[in-house]
Length: 264
Image 1: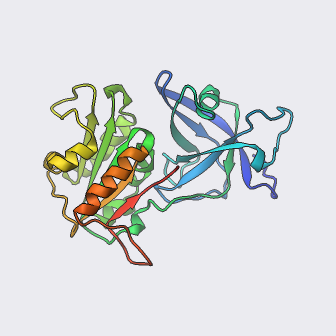
Image 2: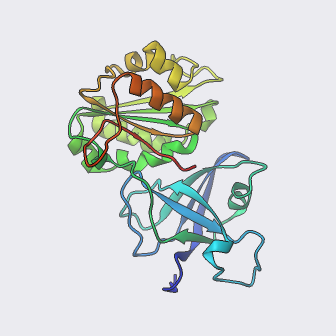
């Protein structure tokens, strides 16, 4: 769409909406400004003119309501895609959920976040721990050839409450078909039995040692690299637990073996 250069955002259009769990989980796909670029794992800010004059097509960015969402799509895809949770009493997500194909969405021109594979040394096992829609940050990494060039294997852990919240499983299965034993996918539901997997939180599985056992690989700070993305309770607790096991974030240009995304 036409861009007005003095604005910090671009005006885009919803081209597709997918509801994964009615009244809870959904995705939107939007048009994309040709200048918008990102690395897998980074996130954008989506804006809506909540409570503003509907006739104002280019409202001031400071007057709009903004929220952060990781890109699900690949960096070179034609469209942008975002995975979201509907919070019934939330300020932003109900309006986002109500959008349909053809509706307008505002996207900040800047990209944010450092949850990218270049934060880690090459080799070893890349662990991707997510809860809920935190999965979205990791999906473009799975389909990025650089991920498979840099790491020997990838372990994706996705924690949810219910089985129907496991999204993008077809995409994940296609990764498994391409990379075989180099890729492990653990879908952990806490409130419903799923296959032969335990009904426990990811952090509890770290403490008990079951997560490493299920993955078939040790959590060794010498060769493992961890990324965390999801609800703040999980990321805070997992970061502490992994820190106690010798994992550290990179500092002052030194590569670490632990990276955590914070939207809040």
